[in-house]
Length: 352
Image (cartoon, rainbow, N blue to C red; front, side):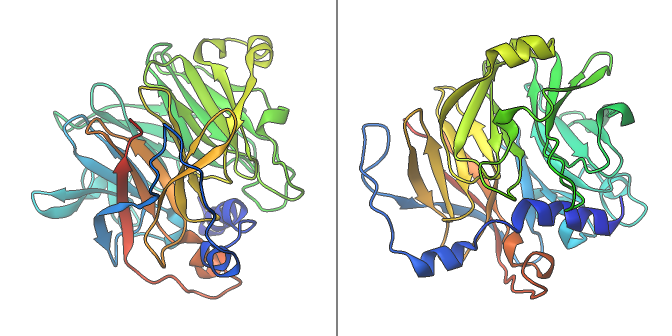
């Protein structure tokens, strides 16, 4: 995929949101009423990885704690995917042939997740395919192509979930990747056994922004039981959900989508085993909890940092996330490059 297309796609995601710094400078910190679910004290997240050079976009952790990150194509990374702190080093993953250089197999990876077998799923929007890698035996499992028939010229294939109960992956296609087209968001649903793919619920009201000129379906998550899929538009403060079993037909999907709760303008979303739904708040620079009645602040990102991006629930009792300052890049900041490292992977405790 040409660099200009990638830049346009990411501009479309970020340009409409206020800078977290601007927000912090223009308003006082809000007081959040404590509840039995949220600590009385709003904490600052803990930094677990910091780098001047590696700028994590999304992340995934395996059951034994191995940490993998994708590098956002907007920053033209030499290496597209890293395993962080392997034997004390940060290494290209799965190897240089796949991840490093102009001739690498990966072209533009943002979406990255691990399944229950610790296979790493990498969504390459540059080559329009999934690469599934066995992290235990360090070998390729398979690739799954995303057919041209289910994508649009302005498709933006970033976030996805793996539904192992129903043998599916579900991509949230925001579209608007060319910065000109009207939103045509949809789910792209792919059968992981035979590769069959379909575009579903295109332009459903639940996927559309709630502000004029805003951007559509972006964050998506599935609960650990693979029962419910949660999602929303980037520029929406409403969260929706639909049974994971409903992705068999558009009719069933339309009839079972429901409003679930309140969220922030968000780029990342995760669900834990207790049904708590976490979102990144890209305006206020924080991690929050979405409930049926309100949005609650859980933890602030470090002072001076902006754009909490991807989230991941690990099995160690923590929620992990990336903080990558994408809103400060020249392409997304009126031509001014104001990004200043370090770039982070952070964590905060899951809600008890």
